[in-house]
Image (cartoon, rainbow, N blue to C red; front, side, top):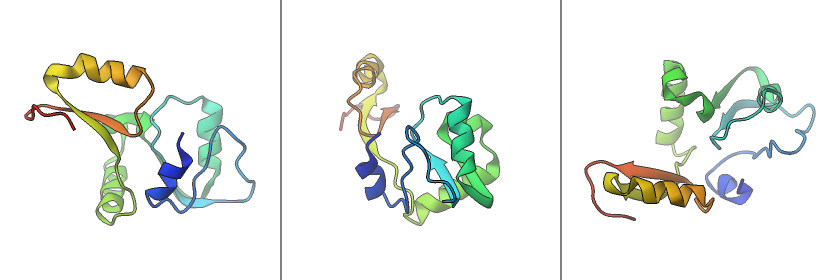
Length: 122
């Protein structure tokens, strides 16, 4: 995980979940935006970092599983500029195989987007 990139996107704090979380330090919101499947132990650690009444949102859960309130909260954070999505590259639908190779190589520094109505790569 690129901690500097995450911090530059406006996070108040960045937790490297591969290391121990500082005991006693809690947050109102933990947004797990990495998107890799985590063990139950890591998810428990993320939730342990929440203040009472805090919210844990993970992209692992996928959009269909996210509660409407989670999506509303996430939308408000993006609109307020507190969460900034990072798109590394866009590929047209006709180049899905190339996009998958790029992702598989592990070089992406953000999300890779497949566009349906646009045929140019950025």
